[in-house]
Each structure stands twice: as C-alpha cells, then as structure tokens.
Length: 145
Image (cartoon, rainbow, N blue to C red):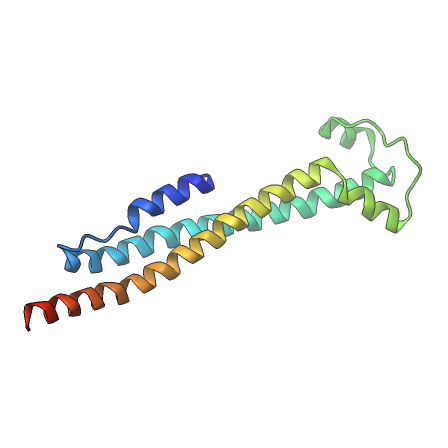
C-alpha cells in the first residue's frame, strides 16, 4: 500500500455518521483492529528489511575489501572490485554511497513513514471515542435530556 492509498483509506474510515453514533462507537474497535493489523505488518517488514540491509552490508563490506570468491560474485552478478582495499573509514564511505544498500535503506524509511502514519491514525481512532461521547452528550443536551 502506498502512502496515498493509506491516506485515502483513512479519509473514508475517519468519517463519523452523526445519525448513528452508537454504531460509530462500535466501528471504532473494528477500525482499531484494521490499522493495528497494518501496523504489525509494516513493523514486520521493517525488521525483515533491516535484516536484509545488515546482511547485504556485510557482503558489500567483503566485496569492497576484495574478499568475495568467484561463486559469490557470480551469485550476485557482480564483477570483482577493481579499487584498492579500503581502510575502515574509506569502506564506510563506499558503503554509504552503495546503490544496493541505499535502495534497501529507502524502502526501510518509506515503510517507517507508513508505520508512523498508522500510529497517528490509531491515536485518532482513540480520540474518536471521546468525540463520539461528546457528540452524544451534546445531542442529549439539545434534546433536553
């Protein structure tokens, strides 16, 4: 799910039918469940991508040091590193600019944004109960009850 899709979904879900506040109060639990499931899914993806990043970082470190054998290079579709064996600070700079690692990092950051957005939505769902209760109290006041 993209961020726009998530926001469009929330835009539909956040509406409160003022004529059926009792049903809206019950719907809050379903909304919470829906977004909690999404949050769990994205947090699991973050952990998996972080693991992928760490593994790839280790392989890339060995690559830049010229320590990969022919089978490993063929497996990744890479050619042997032609540069000099970098010292640690140079290796860190190479890793920071590595396209494969940056691609994984961008995915991690994007999913973190989705996860943060869902956390914000869940806070709003918690506030929703308060809004519904106040709307009910207001309707009682207007009705003179």
